Length: 290
Image 1: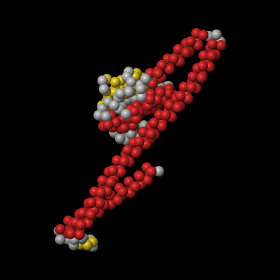
Image 2 (image 1 turned 180 degrees about the vertical axis):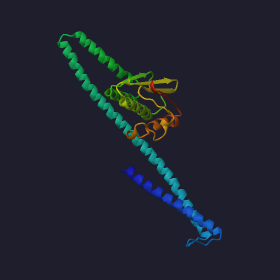
Image 3 (image 1 turned 90 degrees about the vertical axis):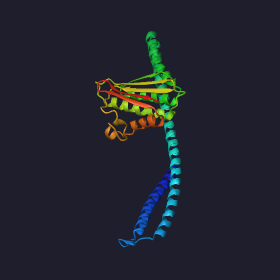
């Protein structure tokens, strides 16, 4: 409610600001015409120079004061909007975490029933093999948890579950923890989620004949965080325009803001680099260094 009132106040002040700009232009025009000895134009009496200057000074002071106030309010609004976005992202990650925990609990109970059935049937070897397969799967979860950044860990687990729904092989190679990286958790989640979502979309839309693979590599070389995300099912002829705002290959399903956000975060906020390699036969690979 408070944010909405702030927005209404800001919009009202912007309208007043624009109106004052037009008034300043009008008064300036009166001063110019009066200096040329013109007293009337299109039936409108021209204001004398002295009066016009007085009005112009008043409008300029008012315009300057309003401009300073608007700048201050816009700065406050930006901070509030960022805080709300961060809270929303945190809430979404928490909900994803809870969903994953429920799914893991459900799967674990099913696994116990299978193991119990093997034991009751006297098939101990099959029970042992089944346990080994479960352990291999859980080892991947432990590796993701070893990132020391819960937000990124939850995101990768969620994306792995989503990719599995479309028979996409989701591989990850996490070579370093993220405890001392300079990028904020929220920004890293935005970068990873946008790139992985695009990769899943491309492979989801691809036919069954295409090998559906996503590889995520996270490493830390010195103080530099290196991220590499590859998908086997897409080809980008022009890798430069994809970062333009509004550009999308998804038609009505896309907003054209995902890669723009990634590029803005990497280059403008963290002074990093982002390279794209795309092959019609191999796929597309994003390399990011921050």
